[in-house]
Image 1 (cartoon, one colour):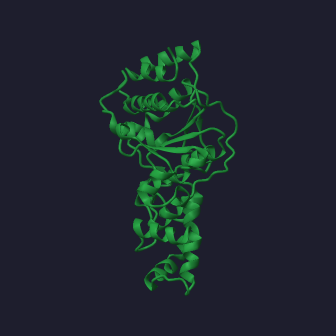
Image 2: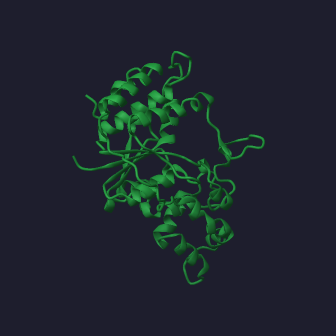
Amino acid sequence: MTERLMLLDTASLYFRAFYGVPDSLKAADGTPVNAVRGLLDIISRLVTDYEPTQLVACWDDDWRPAWRVELIPSYKAHRVVEVVEAAADIEETPDPLVVQIPLIREVLGILGIPIVGAPEHEADDVIGSLATQATVPVDVVTGDRDLFQLVDDARDVRVIYTARGMSKLEVLTDASVVAKYSVLPQQYADFAALRGDASDGLPGVKGIGEKTAASLLRDFVDLDGIRAAAADASVPLSATMRSRIADAADYLDVAPTVVEVVRDLQLGEFDATIRPLDDARRADFDRFAEQWNLGGAAPRVLAALGNG
């Protein structure tokens, strides 16, 4: 089997599982387990269909890093729960999901799927670093468009995009990113900075939407090229567009740092190889599955991970 690394944007997937699986699924003590079950079924489907040999659950050790917020204060601000004297920003998460996150971490550990995060960084940055540093083909599984910037046919890095649901997964390559947005994956971060993204609290440049952003990048290659063209009177560009870019100078100075994923994190050593559970782990998993009422999700994930 060809070596292939699969990187899970774990929070993206467990939120999808939580909202996609009925919350009537509970353990004997009444704890909801729909997100746990749903995530395991997502993993089963992904591993069965795409046959990775390595699997990593990438984690948000810091879902809203202070260094990004310092540059753009509105970054993810709409997702923050207002908590008096909170030590850090707390992401708005339904209580029935909050109680399942420790269970998700526990079951991933039992299954031998490493959970990898980094202080002061998001899962996106972990994914960006692992994908960039990998020496084997990579599949990134996410519902986040920001990670389209990692797609790279030359290095065999694909994004398996979940936004339309698990029954309509999209595998994004260079050609499909171009077909969707008329920009190359390598231009996607600049494209997102120009266009903005309400889901991340990124304002973008006033008056520049997707089509205009793509057109500017087609003509001037990247954000630096666009800004240089706007400042050069000899370049054919409308006065309105020059004004829009000039007015957004402060934002454009910092937006690339916020939008671009970090690619050079040193994440230490871990074993991501997918392999069957040994007897001790299998017993631990069976106990966990019974205690937390995993139902059919348990045998499905075992089978997908090579447990006969």
